Length: 376
Image (tube, rainbow, N blue to C red; front, side, top):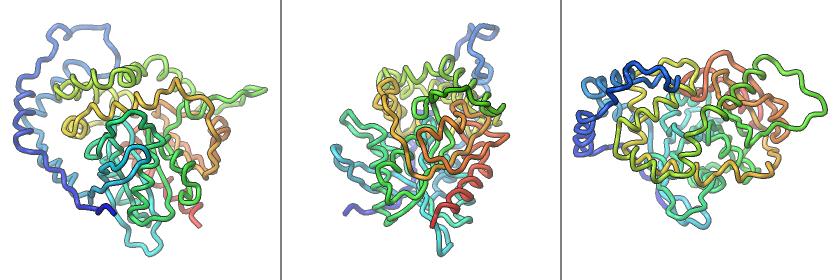
């Protein structure tokens, strides 16, 4: 049996030296200062220049690295059918409570394992053992070489991790890609997974049902429908690029830290609910992809082509949903109930796609309330 080994992030000085050289040589556009035609995402030349100057002169990766290393991190190998052994990096923080509930927290893109940071102490204090892995291809987890590694294999990998840690029953939470993976974990392991909680739903996994009569939607639900339409028509080009040309795009992102920064800023700004992202936060989120390599996370988009999904099977696992007003992909409850056993639904007045980071108290509070209600 593979061992579970402690892990600490330790970026070599030589890599930091190269990064600093690239930052000093960064070439920003000089002919866009007065443009009025570009996308309205806040990623202006002025904003990028401001963050870049902070990065050059004030930001300390070593301080951020030390903060991240306060999270109890480990690495082990898990077996995935058809793909052999894969190295999995994860956070594992246990509660002092005698009746603690094992909880699997699954991130998405452009997030990382670090998204668990703010909710971790809340959940530990509330009596949850928390496991937050880096998904295969993300961060310090190994990326499969062969094609065909879909979210079903992601689900198998994280379940194997929970089994390796000795958890015979547990609950799951996920946002972004993590929401679909969490549902797959429940489908694949109905005896082990007691409940699934998600804070992101798109029309691919929970499409609009056919109704004899148009439902009487609430204002919150109407806004969710409109935001979903806006995302599909105006904000999904990145999905097509990453899904069709992950390796090609990866060359640019791998070589240019400022290019990766701008790509990250676009998502952080447009997908959040007016969250005040600090330069340090933006840079650290960027580096958690740039240092390990931003190319391999893109493979998830290619392997899980939304256009190839047909029938959506009903998910009988008790499901809880936290709906945040700034989430660009959320559906009305009546839609979700057609494909999942929704027994908990909570709408909030603040927060967006990155709920664990933007509004950790609300998300963690929902998780505690829901999971405690179904854990018997």
